[in-house]
Length: 346
Picture 1 (cartoon, rainbow, N blue to C red):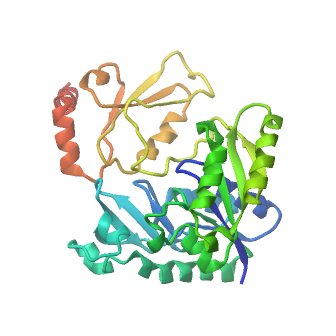
Picture 2: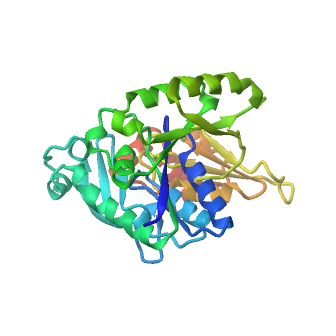
C-alpha cells in the first residue's frame, strides 16, 4: 500500500487545492506515480470524466497536474448546493438524491428521499471513501488528499470523512495550510491544532504558510515561536501568486455580484473591447465556464444583478442554475427579465 498526505487548511480558500496540485506535479516530475483525492467536495462547478462521472473541478485539475486521468475514485462524494439547507448528493459520479444539511451532517433521519436513502448518517459513507482511497493507493505510489474547510470544525467532527476522519482511517500525516494574506495565520495554526483531539493532533506533521507578501525573514521569529508552542515545524512559505486562473471551488462561498473577470495579460487584438455581462443568478452552476472567455485578450466579463448594467454589454449570458424557479423570480424582481426580453426583440 502506498503512502500519502492530507493537505488541510485553517480556513476555506487557504490554498489547499493549489498546494495539493503543486505537490502532485512536483512528484510527477520526479517520476512518482501520484493521484489526488478528496473524499467529499461541495461545489456548483463539476467536471465530467471520460466515463461520464461528475467530480469536483479541483480534483480534475489536480489529476492533470499529476498527469493522470481524472476518475470518480478521486472524489467519491460531491455535494451540489440547491439552497442554503439542501444539496444534491453525487456518489461515485452519479446523482443519488437530495439531502438536507441536517440529514447529511447531523447524523439523524431526515424527511427527504436523499435523507432516507442515506439514513442521514454521513459516517456510513466512510467505508465508501476509504475503499476508493485504498484502490488509489494500490494503483499509485502516492496519494495526496485534500481536506475541506478546516479540520477544526468541532461541531462536525463526529461525522467527518474528509479531514481528520480520512486521515485517521488512512493514518496519513497532515499538513495544515494557512492563508497569511488574511492575517492571523499564527493564531489560526495554533487554534486549529489546539481544537483537535489528542489522537488527531498526533497526525499533524506541520504547517505551510501560503500567500505571503514581503520579506520572509520578518516571519522567522513567529515561526520559531510557533515551533516552541506546538512542537511542529513550518515546512515552507509560499509567495502570493497573481493570475493563477484556478477555478473557484465552493459554490456557497463565492460572491460574484459586481465581480469582474478580465484579461490583464494582453491588450485587445484590435481597437475594440468585447463587454460580456453574466447575470449572477442564485445557485449558478458551472459559472467558471466563462473564465475561458475572460482569458481572451480584450474581453471583459462582468457579473451583474441590475438591468442598467446590461446597457453597454455586447453579449449577455444567462447561466445555468440549480434553482430555476428561484433564478427566474430573481431576474424578474431586478428588472433583468424585461431587459433581456427587450434585447431579444431588437
